[in-house]
Each structure stands twice: as C-alpha cells, then as structure tokens.
Length: 435
Image (cartoon, rainbow, N blue to C red; front, side, top):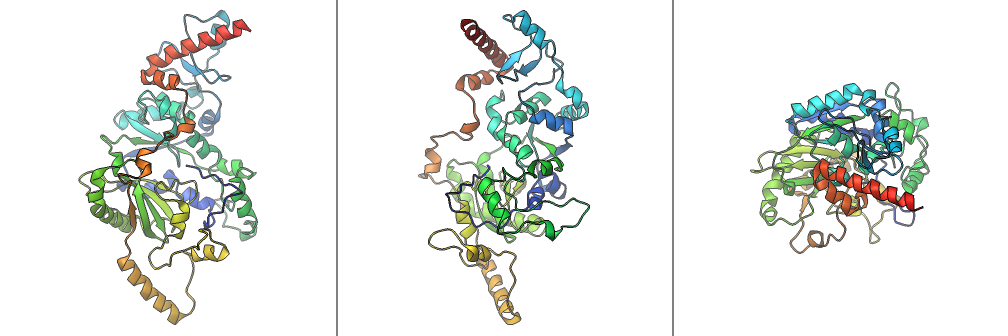
C-alpha cells in the first residue's frame, strides 16, 4: 500500500529511499537469484504497446475463440458493453463495428500469456514488478486473483490502482535519480540531502518531473505465478529486516487463528533459519521487507515477495514509527518521548555507521555478538480480543471497489456481467431520451 505524506504530520525517520533500492525489490530483479525458494512462476517482458494498453482508459478485451461477440467498455462511461444486444440501435452497431482487437498490437505477448497459463496448469495469479491487483478482485468472476485466460489477466491489471501505481509512481518518494546503467553514479547529480528529499517527502514524488521519464526505463515484466492449491492465508507472514537482521514479523491475514499461538516458536525458528540461509547475505540492500508462506507441516518456507523498506509497504500489525524505533540486535532502542526523531535520531538509525576507535570498536563488536546471540525477533499475531480481528468496519481495499450491483453481477460470471451490461445500457438510453 502506498503511504501518504501529509505536511501537517510528523515525518518518519526513514533513511533515504533510492531508486536502486526500489529496483532491487522488483520481482524481475530478485527472482532469478531465489528461484529455487519461490513458488513456480514465469516472467514475461512487456513492450511499449502493451504498457500503453495498460495505461489507456477503458477496458477493451481481445476476442476469445469461443466468443460470438466482443467484450469491451465504453471509454466515456467506463461501463461494460457488448457488441450484439437485442436493444442495440443502428448507431450503436455502427460505432461498435469499428472494434479493433487490442492484442493485434502485441500478439507475441498475448500468445505467451496464453501458453504460460497452460504450462502452469491453467490457473495463475498475475502481478507486475512490485504489485499484485488485489484491489481489483471484485471484477473477477471468482472474486479472487486466479486467472484462467489472458482476458482474466487483462481485466484484473487494467482495473487495479495498485498496478497503475507500478506504472506511474514506481519511484515516488525516492531521493535521487538513477544513473544510466552504462555510467557510474555521479555524485554531482545527486540533490542536496537537506532539500530534494524533503520536497519529495512532502509531495510523495508527485511533483518529480523526471518520474515518468525514469518509469520508461524500468524493465516491466508480467509475472504469472502458478496458483497454490489450498493456500492457507493464515500461514503467510511479513518479515522486516534492518541492518541485515530479522527485526520482527507478523501475520499478513488480519484474522485471528487459535492454532497460531501454539505454532509461534516453530514458525519463528523456521523463518529465522530461512532468512539466515537464503537472504541475510545475498540481498543487495541491508534493509527490506519480505513475505513468506509456511505450509503445513511447517518444514519448508517459500519466498513470496520482497518489498521496499519504505512507507509504501504496509506494516500491517506494526506501525512504521514503531518499527523504526524498535530495538534490534546490538542497537539501543531509538527515539524519544515524542516518537519522532530529529537529525540525531535519524543518525542513530545508522545501520551503515562505523565505529570510533579500534579499542572501542572491538568492545562494541563483542557486545553486538552477545546481543545477537540472545535477540529474538518479535512475532506479532492477531489476538482473540484484538480490534483487528473484529472491527473491520471498512472492507479491505474498499476504496477501490465498485457498487454492489456490479459485484453481484460478477459473481454470476460472464453471463451475469452481460445481463448487467444490457440493463445498464437500457437505463442510460432511457435517461437520454427523457432529456
């Protein structure tokens, strides 16, 4: 989830967020290295025509072989319409006869998506470099992210605000421009740390004139992951890493599960071992967030995703201020009574700091080793009486959803949506006639 910066709210004492860190957390960047510990997935590079299709208004889907009519949206109203309705007027038929299959502009990608779905067993979950279209499940006939055809994939991607963020605001809030790959970093081109980062923190990167240009350099990929049968969301966990140490972890599914309380010890041991063996010394950055799945009987851990150490990543059962001030291995607890650090407190976050003096440094090294031996990451669960378990007055991703009539129609599959389209177009026509 994208964090919103408010000028009237205290600024979180985050280290500078760089574009290189955001790119390191892109699925296409880390997946080749960790492929053996991730669920089966395939990556499809995306070209400019397909990205233009994702960015375009309205939803126009390619004609599938079993369709007798195409499935599209009117670009003005954004409401679904079909090509041959009994209530069509001649003018409607004329306008719809100009339909052009959008996949004609990216035929190789369309064919690749179709063959990949078949290769992965006919059921996949899509995402782009960073985000999955979780906010658009309302539009899918199955009310989840499972896709069985290319059109299912396109419908989810084009209906998702999270995907739009990947396309338009991938570097929002970053403090420095990313140099071209063929050139070394030029320190002269990096803005003054007292000026540019503060501006970006206030406007969330929306006023960064270079944002769109930098987005064009991103090697966008469509990730199709094989659907995990009988996925137990209760066993998905989000883990926070600071200074290459597992600081804390929590549930991703914000519901209470009785059995988790007795499993905390074994789960923590397995996740800690997984982190130490696979991620601690191999990921490019010292601070990051990763998601794992630990299916029964809890003997294997799967890496699901790697997320930026940034406000845009949802801290779930924690708050970012709490995490930033949390005492880790070999470091004192950060922050003061006001909960917000000044320049000194930001320095104390100094995961990249160095020791002063050899004797003092050796003593601190010994103390850090002792701390690391006894440090146990906090494992936070939703308790039986916690408000998170019972007080969801607003449904998850509720701001991205549609009216109940549309959701109900999607539950009946394509036939329900087509029936809803016909009723809607009839209502619109009647309203126009009354004017």
